[in-house]
Length: 171
Image 1 (spheres, rainbow, N blue to C red):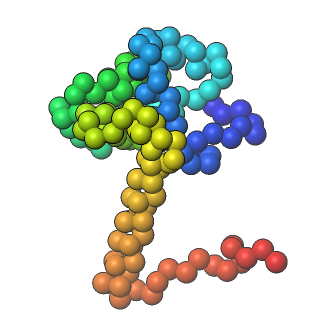
Image 2: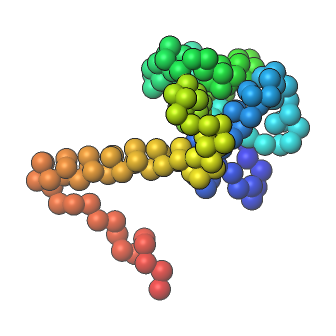
């Protein structure tokens, strides 16, 4: 539950970058997942990349399963994703829907992919994350969705959706 007035990645965007900023340094430091969860709880901070409203340990998100399987196979040693999965073991023991969500999985897999490629130094990877590279993926996916809606409306010969002016004009 979020404290009143608290601003976090779930209310302002940034969950992918924030998940990478949380999991990668902890994994690199050799932090034990249970210790990480305890430290985050003491600091009253959400663990970005953990939790889902609908999906749970018994009802997994297929997107996460696909990304996780691919990353663990191809981005060895996949230390960031492996750490996040350890955090998931701790959090799902408390509540079944505190799973590694698609944002957290993408963030960890992306960091592991960049590291495994040997095309970037750790400093370059950190700079990319701090510059919002991962959230750029989030925006890109939404852009593709908007283009799809537009093309569907044209194909179905429907008028383009226009949001009511009184909802968006403040005069």
